[in-house]
Amino acid sequence: MKTTVESLFKKKARGEKITMVSTYDYWSAKLCDEAGVDCILVGDSLATVVKGEENTLSVTLDEIIYHARCVRRGAKRAFVIADMPFMSYQVSLEKALENCGRVIKESGAEAVKLEGGKELAPLVERLTLAGVPVVGHLGFRPQSIHLTGRPRVVGRTEEEAKKLREDFKALEEAGAFMIVLESVPSELARELSESASCLVIGIGAGRFVDGQVLVFHDLLGLFEDFKPKFVRRFLEGGKLIREALKRFKMEVERGSFPSEEESYG
Ligand code: KIV
Image 1: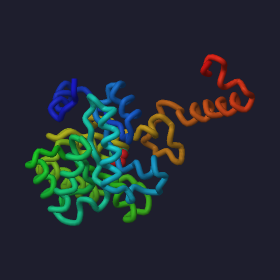
Image 2: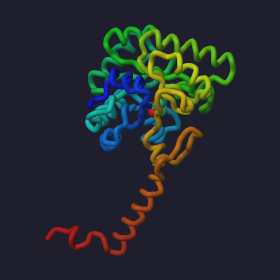
Image 3: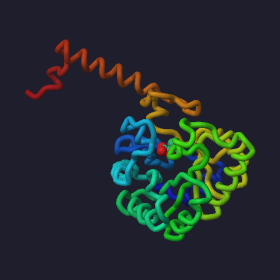
């Protein structure tokens, strides 16, 4: 059955957790879909994972549209969310609406994700009124990396926790149907989640939320440059792939690949 905003809320009402994976192409989206993952996020993390950049800031609207289209072809059932790139929704309300509209129309994604707090409420409201489901992103916000210089936990001081509560409430009231909390102390995430009417998905926000998101390449051990505390590797994919590539090289070099059966008569 196709995953929709409605079916995600029903899942929460049944007390079941929601799963989300960030990924960027057809084959990985197909694997997530076949594994029953509820949502696929075409995250701007593609900058670090796919392009090898240091942060997410360089991603363009055209890149998100291109990758979301690839994901859409692989994801027949999962709900597809596209991350809006840095500076594609901050210039003006009109420009932001235009860009979000482009992503939805051209990529086939079913929702957009925006990083930011109460300053985004007017945009969230307009998008929601226009029928575009909106996902907020609070806590550590990778698009603001230059403010901190490195990823960090957000909400440990009373001042930060207060701001997080206010931003959360503003996004929720403006109509965001889902909010991603990144690197937030688990007790604060629990408090926000327990009183929320929207869905709360965590990444480094503990287990007392409605669901979890991880990056495909992180959870499969394919991206090995660094491993945040909140990542669990469910597979050592990098090691397995390296071993397979070494076997390929060895068998070609020693002349045992291709065999007769792998050759045309
Ligand atoms: O870009 C991304 O993949 C994300 C998730 C890690 C939440 O924002």
